[in-house]
Image (tube, rainbow, N blue to C red):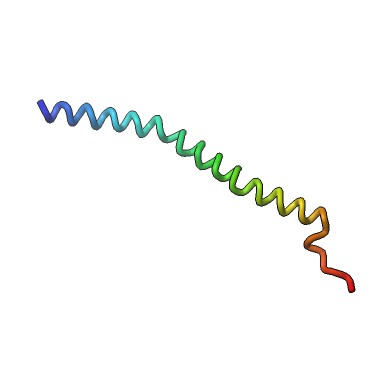
Length: 57
């Protein structure tokens, strides 16, 4: 009986892994967008204000 239960648990874990797969991908996408997005936004803002231009003496 225990062998049958372990087989059921394995099939359930496989189904959970398949459901988690897209969630992991979307989580990575969200982390990328919210991690890199603000950095790019800050760089664009600083560039527009002339932060990266060499100072003229």
